[in-house]
Length: 449
Image (tube, one colour):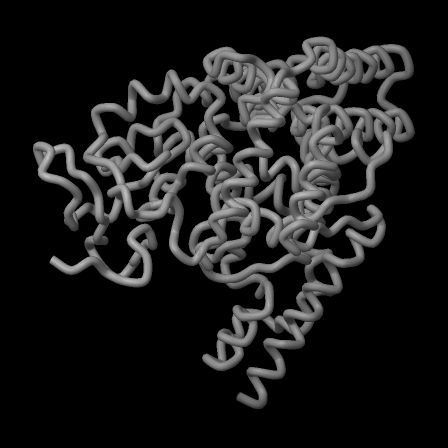
């Protein structure tokens, strides 16, 4: 059997098998030989695992594994797991062999030295204890969220339900919800506690009881984004359901095919009417509720119900049922604007394309950019102004991003990888500018190609 060039680790979506030159577990010491291996196999630290049966049981969802099928997933594996030794017990039964001695440790079209230098950088960060969280930081962060909830209730009890009081109340609740969103993000990435189980428990409390959402829904969606950011068909965050065209290639493809679900040359204008105001109060709410029911995430549903019970018990005595619903909708309307501008400023203006099988560092940096640091920017964005460092090291506590940043910039400079950083205002403007650019590309292709 001939091994398929150019590289044994590249995923072939149109084939049912890929060929790996490995020392098989079943070869009984006969030496390395070409081995017919299921497409849902992965290489982690030169060991080959068949994850076909495990995928549906994977806590992060089956898609995040399938997105890395047929590839060297070493860096992705290290990025998502805080205790690789514990995870090894799940991997051991899946082991089917090892790469042959002459086989490279990474896909053939990747810079092997860059890959090794990045892994060395990660080891340096570990030695500097940058993956160790500060209990004080996260305790104070949770405390300031709860304090805002209490302040809102005290203000309502003292001043009543007038229009001015209600507007101020809505702003306080919006701020609390937004900051709770950033906090659940920390626990979801296992970046607070040393034990995964503790992170999962508190994650369910924050996203469920404080926000009324689903931890499993968030995990299954967000981990795909981190594994393959800005990659069509793999990153759900760039699946815009034909409402927007993104990047440089999709608009041209749509234009050539004469696809016109919406007037994309005006998407930078209708963006303000569709995306920021509707994402959380409409699209996310429908998706969260339907996902919990369809996938039987009953624990998540119970946590979400506890949020709504707490909310309505608190506010119905002041506003009644209809007034409480209106207040909740308005808060989510405001929070949605906050969430969209912060989360999209790092990604929409960056490269959005099909899979290019880059190394971990290059693929993450091509899809992300940073925002200048300041106390306000750190708080306002939940430290997502350090989007590059967060994507490279998602389990790193966010208060340590600024410490690893110089190391990342130095490595990027060494290999000529562009490290982009901009002011907060420019980042917001670039969202609209990139949408306009993509819309113009679509119109040109639609009319002339």
